[in-house]
Length: 337
Ligand SMILES: NC(=O)c1ccc[n+]([C@@H]2O[C@H](COP(=O)([O-])OP(=O)(O)OC[C@H]3O[C@@H](n4cnc5c(N)ncnc54)[C@H](O)[C@@H]3O)[C@@H](O)[C@H]2O)c1
Image 1 (cartoon, rainbow, N blue to C red):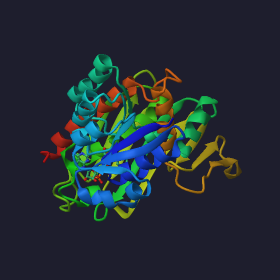
Image 2 (image 1 turned 30 degrees about the vertical axis):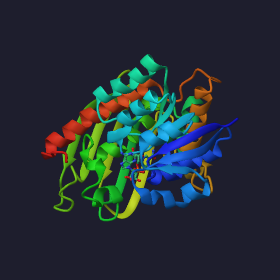
Image 3 (image 1 turned 120 degrees about the horizontal axis):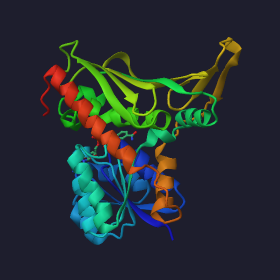
């Protein structure tokens, strides 16, 4: 019998990635959803899958038998809703990034495992996208050599990007404001290549009077491996003319690799152009949620003891996001809403 799956929060992440994954994974079937906005009951994602829709979370937990729950609400609610679910006997939880909003909240989540035997999988989905997987495979085979530098660059057009242009968006209340929403991706994708990281430097600036509610519109962050000499540079800008451009470049001692998340290119030294190898190019967008949530189900069902995402990785991401967020806020004099 398939596991009965539920989703909390039906924004683009919940209705697209989470409901999609519960339908795609052979061991699960979506049965019910919660969102406080009654209009979300009419979403085709909900009606086509014949999910029962609730606007009262306790009621859903009382009336439904839920084997696996994904929490895709704004991060300020993640811990409280995970606690509420565990109190109702739910033991298998998937939680979106940012997992929680502080180190103290992280401890609260870990207690749900240690005290109640719950199993929790944070969503670190970009690690599972084909372009990033190609780079990890290349690294594991020794093709990249030692990792010297990683650059992750995230460019948005603040006039149209929904989380920047909306003054009331919940992301502005996260550590570092809007950047605290996306930072997890930039940190955890580097960790398989550089190991554990420590912060070296943050440069945050407000270069425009647009979006007064935004913490900063230009941010550069430098981190380095704790045990390796490689560095990670993260750059955010709200000043791109188009909506989105996000990419990652890895400088290895033997080769350079580049990915936009989906496709990847690798250039091997020495540098004749004909040795530039396109090594993945999927035809349509594939979210890393699907393979990650599939692995989480294997873990929930006890078919493997291996956690898809370790607590060490999740904890480091939460701690670094809080530390970097505080530095951004201090540099630009930002007070969270
Ligand atoms: N992993 C990824 O690639 C990815 C991409 C986008 C968003 N996210 C994450 O997913 C989560 C949701 O993001 P989004 O972009 O879908 O958000 P959103 O703001 O677009 O939508 C949030 C939804 O949650 C509902 N909501 C509000 N309060 C709620 C509550 N107390 N309980 C349950 N639902 C509530 C809203 O009505 C809305 O339908 C966030 O943690 C975000 O950072 C992850």
